[in-house]
Image (cartoon, rainbow, N blue to C red; front, side):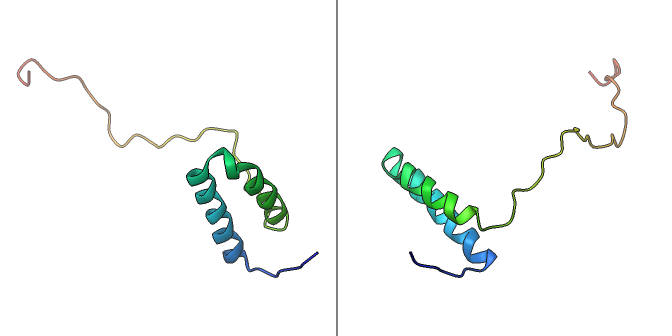
Length: 71
């Protein structure tokens, strides 16, 4: 077994390279990339949390239907 020390940025770049390889190679490389991504991702930061409550932007102005003169 070999040990490699990577910075967070290097881990992100390596994960991006695996993603590109899967997109280019399809199912032929997906299984190998998945195994490597699991090993690499297990050492990386935990996944970001996803908020379950939707947030909507505030309306800036009310929209009114056009008047007969504008049609």
